[in-house]
Amino acid sequence: MALTKRQRAKAFRGVQYGLLVVILIVFAFVADWGTIKRAFFDFEVMSKLFPDVILVALKNTIIYTALGFAVGLLLGLVLALMKLSPVPPYRWIATIYIEFFRGIPALLVFIAFNFGIPLAFQVRFDNLSTVTISLAIVGAAYMAETIRAGIQAVPKGQIEAARSLGMSQGRTMATVVIPQAFRIILPPLTNELIMLTKDSSLIYLIGVQYEQLELTKFGRDAMNQYRGMTPILVAGALYLIITLPLGYLSRRLERHTGGKKVS
Amino acid sequence: MTEPAVVITGLKKSFGPLEVLKDIDLTVAPGEVVCIIGPSGSGKSTMLRCVNLLEEPTGGKIVVNGVEMTDPDVDIDRARTKIGMVFQGFNLFAHLSVINNLTVAQRKVLKRGEKEAEEVARHNLERVGLSEKANAMPAQLSGGQQQRVAIARALSMSPEVMLFDEPTSALDPELVGDVLGVMRQLADEGMTMLVVTHEMQFAREVADKVLFMDGGYVVEQGPAAEVIGNPQHDRTKSFLARVLNPTHQDPTD
Image (cartoon, rainbow over all chains, first blue to last red; front, top):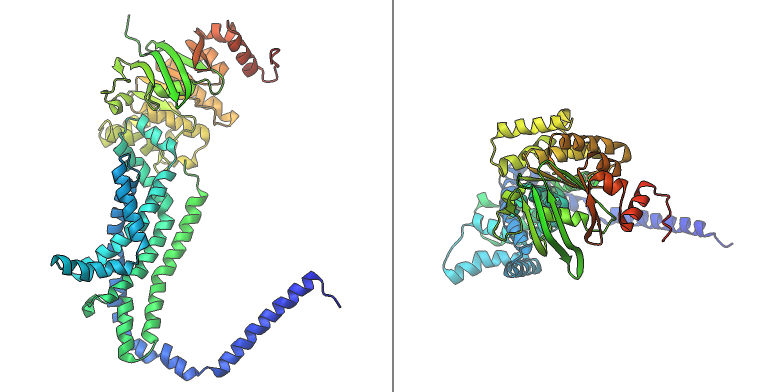
């Protein structure tokens, strides 16, 4: 008997559910739950990780990210303004910077600042500066494009109104355009912040003191010490504690500014 | 004789190959209300925007209150503080409350103190009948209210000339009256005004002088009653016939 199109679709969906159930059952029988629990959810190890995983690692991740973001935002704003400059060389410089640092791995920048520049110029940055500068340099390249788009999204009438009131070009930028641009780009900027949070893990490359460990390096060291996946899992969960609310915030802001007319 | 408020001589403006203003002359006396009418694309908005140099003229000379706007060395920002402008799209600063829309330029440009700026702002909000909206955000106001706030914002700079660029064209019909009422009151108080408008009733009743523009030229100008009531040129006649009676069919069409 030939099945109708709808019946075929229904049958196919049934097969998909069935397959999933079979896989789960097989997995449940095959898996060694004792080992899995010991490897991933060793509560004894977990209890040893606290409170330092919060007070040291999570705290440092937040500090590194916040510093990198703040400096990067400033640098990104300067680059965005350069990109919009009527003077061509400024635009070229900004474009080269943005394309360069968006095109190379962030890890390379960390290596350059921690090893390359000290070797080449006999200068030495402390670890906090290395992280801040590296994150800022990479973050700025991404944020510059976002900020530029935000500035250009401010309606032209706003600029005309400001100029007609006697505001100079710079004054118009500072009091009318940039505040509105930031409202527009708050959601994408939040995403940049999430990216930087994860990129702060690149500090694992640098030999840092215990007090300077952030989540990834902390988790990795603890993993070696306790011979199990549990610390990595805890570190991952703590990243999510930062990034999931930021993602939620970003989506909410998007809905908020998307729904409100800016004119 | 007192010095004229606005003198435009031989004004030309091109956008690339497109010549929008061909040769405009206009003199506006202090306290005079000039309405500029004409079909869309006739260059009337461009002419108005040339007065405060939002558009840079290609040729000609513009003098406002004795300051030559077209002089390359003019302090344009300073000159603009004396010329208020009201736009078709209101253009209130979307991120600032009504009161801050009115004070921001006073403080940052005129360097007035916070207290003085706010006093001036509240006085002007009262003039446009929106005192109770001081703390509202622009998005919370109707179009008519936004436009009245925009007028109050321009007035807060204590301008000597006001430019209105189709101030009621973006409004719902029932809100037009409030804005025209404020403009009429302003005219009665002796403000020098240049108004680009399609509101023939307003032009007829309030304007001292009406300018009919078409194709980049001033086709006809004179007292409102003459230009609107008894137009001499065919272009003016057919334009007015169409505007005053939209169902009218021009026999030459």
